[in-house]
Image (cartoon, rainbow, N blue to C red; front, side, top):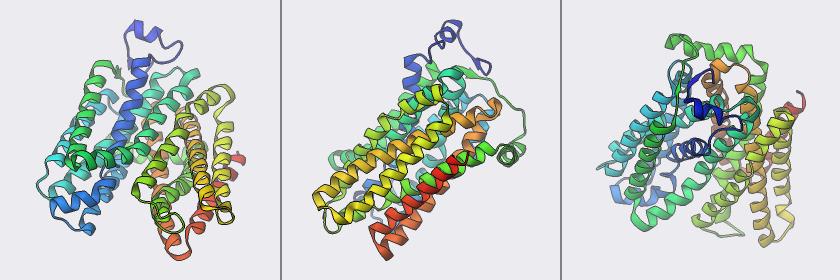
Length: 401
């Protein structure tokens, strides 16, 4: 590999893809690091009472974590092209471990808020792991490898809330942060043992490195299309998940938070099938997979429009099927878009990834904000309309090219 220092025996094994232990490390590292962004959300009620903070005050915990992640994607992720990605991953793992441990031991809300911001910043090690996987993978297997790693990342997002809710209920919120710290420590040790060194692909000073993000955006039409299409899909993805619990709590379902959390398992079922999209991208080209993925998201969201004319029991099954469908479509399109952008410039994969995920994050933030407004004013069907419309826009954008 041109950008890594690998043992010859390990390099030979890449003829059929990455070694299984390394693939598992990359997938679990991406999933466990991004999961740290979401552990706090189901625990806010318990946490606030225990630490003596109001509901409004503890609401800043996930906000600061997400803000830290957004800042980390833009300001830290591009460093993967300037420095050895192995050292960056190890450094972030060490700081993330310390931040999670601080969260577990926090005596007051201000300490916990500071820890949450650092958790968000360093959880971006997931955005260093994915370009590392793309660099290590042989070109003909890149889609499959990236798909496997991204499945780990999406499973971390979808299952983190289910896990943290259960652990907090059984052993308390501090136990969840402590367990998260241990998981990151284990990933850090495994990365130190297994990850090869990566050679820097640019010597740009840091200010020029950040300015180059704009240059890459202007230079590559494929990057612009990928970012805009995936950002549009992210609007519907976030709109659904951010309002689902509130919708299920009301008529006609009257279900609690546990039921909403269980829908994460349905989304995870869709994510598990996503590596198939990577293999199709390797064989048939990623452009087709972006259209298939966006099309599946459109159909899955549009089907929810039937909810008003079917019995509540059937509606629940429709929600489950839709969650599986649009999660699979979203993941398939994301893998294909990553395959496209990683092929644009091998020396700028971290920066290309930063641009793409800035678009995804912006789409998710927009989706959450719009869904909250639409749900409050017009109800669940307005959220479904938003998700369907933005998915259609993404599908049209991919059909155009």
